[in-house]
Image 1 (cartoon, rainbow, N blue to C red):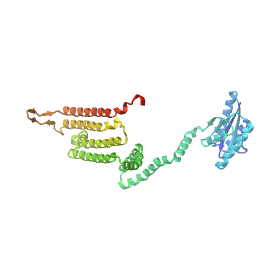
Image 2: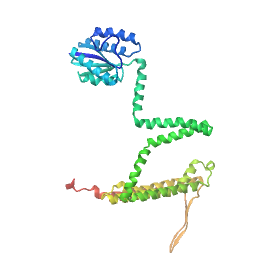
Image 3: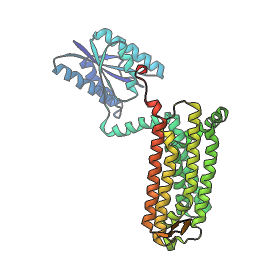
Image 4: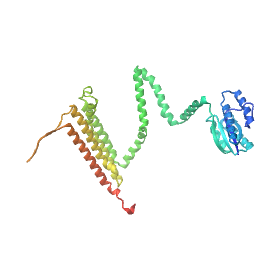
Length: 378
């Protein structure tokens, strides 16, 4: 079994020799010629690696023939020269297989040319140790610059940042403010791309158009939900307007905002989930249990958040304890009482749990007909 060890190179000619070169003695004589012509040329390492591979194959008992192929000129012309020289080598050596030795990733693209003439068992890429990291980085950068999407995502924001930084420093006359503004802008851009907001905004017009043409109720309820959410934010802002954060602390400040805004936010979630449920009822005969249970979950979560925020506010003294007034109806009389903060919280939690259980029961009842399929129809 004869193996042809062929050293491939494209881009320059061999000094004093007309390629292809075949045979160990001819290749060994080529090493000093190439080294003297250009000591920094990687072809020297490629030829020496080819000689080493051939020696290893012979040590294993195989018959190895080493050859060198080199093409010069334009890309197409060099590839044609490599193809012609490879055909000559294969005709002279008549190998059963080949091992290709290259000195760069660019030359590795010539391997299919060799494969078109003889079976290639292995490809050996030799890189000078000092230049390995540099060459790998070069080809990574080359592939990166060839990707249009990566260029737009990385290079464009980087270029804008480099232009904006000196502009902000000149306008604000403060390096700290300029760097902080630029970092915040880049952070928002990374979140914008990382969370897929751009893809969502790109598909949003078509979704709205489809919802308008199909007459979906959820479109209206989503608008209502957005309005209720804005009202909730406004109500929360009013709730904290009379508090001093330095006096009460950030936790109580946040709890007061949540206490005032959560009823409106809960109503917004209830409106959105109800609209989605109505759409499912209109479009499909079978409605998933998740859509049925969603309004109950919105109410239960709202009650839980309202209860915990009320507990913190009562314990901190922002709110007084909840009192139940006296009630007298005919012969029935109820003496009023004052609820402790813990009791008040327990009632909220109990109510949220009961509502969530009711939601699970209603969802199971609605989807029960879909779950029970007759045996004959399975």
